[in-house]
Image (cartoon, rainbow, N blue to C red):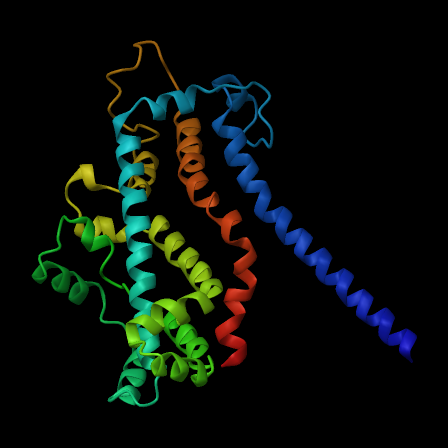
Length: 291
């Protein structure tokens, strides 16, 4: 009987590993194709519509995008709103979650119901636009950061985690003369580093990949994030613009340009993950398991 259970457990484990391997391959193949196409020459693209490794290596596409001010301007805007937005969002979420974690907070139940309500119903695009307009945030980078500064789902998980930190720790700190701000900074934040790292990644990826807010709220092309540039080159057949510094006979296939911009736009956010990988699994499970 024990042998049968062991065999079934191993079979289930091997089956799960096989499924995950297949999913990983399906995920990696398009990425390899994009990267390979970004380094391919015009002749190799004509010979092969699908490639995993470039037969003829070329840096012309990267030379093209890195000699245009448009790409660097979009990259600068994306870095600003991603870094600033992540800091603001994670700070606002943790402060709000810390307040909601206290049972004696006046109006706590009403606020919890209001948060749950926003998970089901949304105001919609037009009320959101009118709200941003009346706050004077149109055509400002703040319009890409402040709306939705607190994600209700993330708030609920972090609130649940904070509420399970032993109250004796806070009481001891209060006896030593610490106020709420001191407790939050010196006790709650250090104990929540796994959650902070995890949800910072969630916020950063969300801001980095967002483009629709920029379409709604930004009219100045100099304030467009990198994702708008990706959208433009798809509709403009790989033309970034600002090509005055290029030679007259310099030609890069539009498909290669698109792949190069996608690769260059994905690379910065990929650099963040290795630094917080050790916190990721623990941070995701903290609030859900204890709640």
